[in-house]
Image (cartoon, rainbow, N blue to C red; front, top):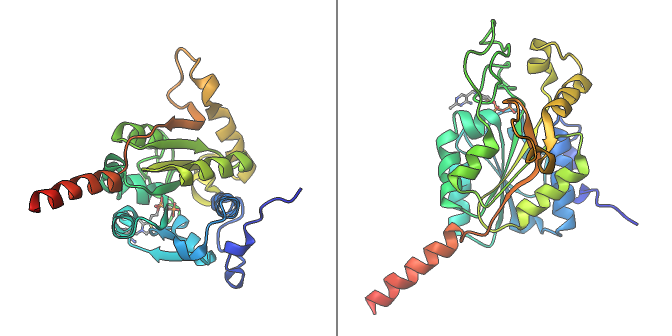
Length: 273
Ligand SMILES: Cc1ncc(C[n+]2csc(CCOP(=O)(O)OP(=O)(O)O)c2C)c(N)n1
């Protein structure tokens, strides 16, 4: 039995990649290219849109079409691409800063519009590229380079945010579950409407070092302690605030933006005679 490697989507000349040892972004990228291969995506029909940050470097290593945009605005560019050419597969890859901190407003409205995109958010709990500053997903109390005595704020639950904003598909995975991560990305890619896959990812260099987890394995252990398969999570009567469900969390079929737009366009055309 042969397994997808995803190699045909990688720009081997650009490798080795530049991420730190222990970082989870490469695991996400591996799952993504395997998902592309299993779905037999043509590179010419696939656009990977990224923002700025360690996660935003992903497109450097891919041979699909790519658009490396500005920090926090990747979803706005991707919305334009999809609205203009609905036939393209549009995948948006962002860090937690990009997607829900500076980019929070675009995230909410892309989900509300239910535009047919797949957003993959690598949540490493801080601004990795610029030195480990606090972000909207940094857990309360955690140490970062800008919260030396602990983060006084609460953190966003990205999946819950996507669900209430209107996404058709929402999932969360951890890098320990590489096969499941690939499956979730495949489901998200196949879903019409806005889909989100959040990947908890170790940032050993900043978040881990600042919070007594100097090794990647320690961060992975931390994820395993905090994450519960969604089926078990739903049986919990009083889940702790720092306990997260993983797996497929939302799967619904509300008409996406392009379908709704066509309905109204047809009305306008009919009115014009
Ligand atoms: C408008 C704007 N503000 C700030 C920056 C500086 N900046 C670049 S990357 C980054 C943080 C990236 O964090 P995140 O999106 O979580 O990605 P990570 O590096 O952790 O993968 C910041 C603040 C920028 N490039 N543009």
